[in-house]
Amino acid sequence: MIDLFSEFPKLGDALPHAQLADLPTPVERAEGLGDAVGVDQLYVKRDDVSGKRYGGNKIRKLEFLLGQACADGAAEVMTFGCAGSNHATATAVYAQQVGLRSISMLLPQPNARSVRRNLLLSYHCGAELHAFEKVATCDARVQAELKRHRVETGKEPAVIPAGGSSALGSVGYVNAALELAGQVARGEMAKPDIVYVAAGTCGTAAGLMVGLRAAGLDARVAPVPVTDARFVNAAKMAELATETAALLAGRDPAFPAMVFSADEMGLREGFLGEAYGLYTEESVAAMRLFEDAAHIGLDGTYTGKGAAALIADARAGRLRGKVVLFWNTYNSRDFSEEIGGIDYRNLPRAFHHYFEEEVQPLDR
Image (cartoon, rainbow, N blue to C red; front, side):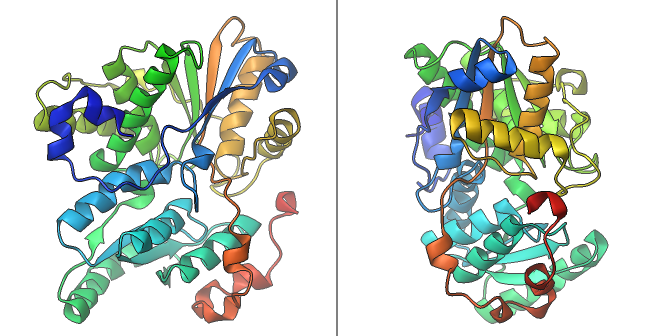
């Protein structure tokens, strides 16, 4: 179900699309959780169940990114992330589903059980995995890998940016905001005043801002940075939101023209901790509270930190009288059976240490 195409029919012809997600995802009132943190009307948007095999926020972006790759006749896609990247894993899963091979260019991150699981699932889905110690080293290798694959397959892989965060990828979250507007109109939840969402590469939050404005929903997005300022900052987010709106308006003049400024982004900072992928006491406490009060799973890298911001604001009284929506971008699908028989030593040696060394203390 693509609400964007229903609202703006010309976009259905102008934007290649691969049907991957199970939409709409549910929106649920979390009364017990709201009582626990002091929010009268707290809802959760369940993008953790956006796909039957692997959920989370990346699938919405991949519907358009992989759709374009298929339309362009690509045989492979190359993408980027850290070792346990949800995006790289989702790309491996859904590229395989549409008949493409995937190549993951991966940087180090603090060890966690989720890193191990994602690496094994990516391998299981046939992803070609490359490890790099630094961004500069990875960047220097990209062109050589693109050339090698072009020679081997006759076609250059389609390049998908980290997190799927491009104007085209963000279209998936423009559609998500329109989907939410439909749920509000049908009475599935009250109109939100504020939407909390973890922000790693800006694409999800930028798409939501565009979509909410297009839908006429006066809701403030509160992006919670979970990576450092190189990857998520107000200027970058505003630029991406503006580019996303321009892409859609260029394909269908009925889509409203929009320009966003850095001052509008409203990043809710202070919850990253020491580094990307390193859990914090606050993120772990948020994970436990969501599980205990709402039976909703989160992770320590992304959604736990987003939830920690919501909880801190609620307990400080900043959300009193507000309708609050937490957008759950986590993958809650269990794929343990798929990876249960895989020997990690089949992976490239550079990834073995994630299985041989202890995970970080807060993940034990």
